Amino acid sequence: MSQEFTEEMEKALLNLRKEIVESLVSEDEDFKSLVSSMGIKDDGDAASDDMMIKKIEALNQIAANRLKSVDAALARIKNHRYGMCLQCGTKIPEDRLRAIPYAVLCIACKSGQEGGRRRDW
Image 1 (spheres, rainbow, N blue to C red):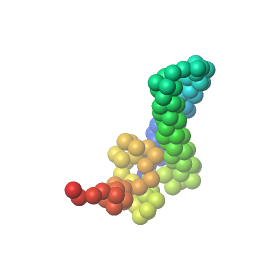
Image 2 (cartoon, rainbow, N blue to C red):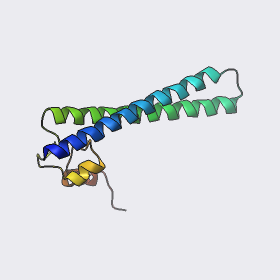
Image 3 (cartoon, helix red, strand yellow):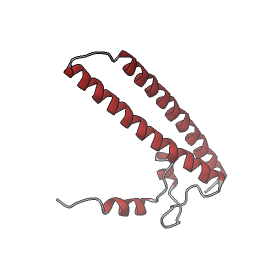
């Protein structure tokens, strides 16, 4: 993998990291607004608020997991292990890394991993 490509991916990962952090901060503000607006409400409003809280929590968990993946990819760049499949050790194609800069598996290993979860209907 060329130094130029690695630098391109590092820049993309840093931009993605910034977007995720900004999203988490925004979601946190939404959560604070929702909590501050809560008061005595009827059952329908309380259920709606509860659903919104669960949605915000789920979105925050997804964003937090993505942030961990991005940070791990940045660490792999620093350790000169970026772009290597963690399962089989082959190079992950540059096109895959451009699409998912924090990918840890090559296409073959990812397909094999997903194949075990799929069912033939």
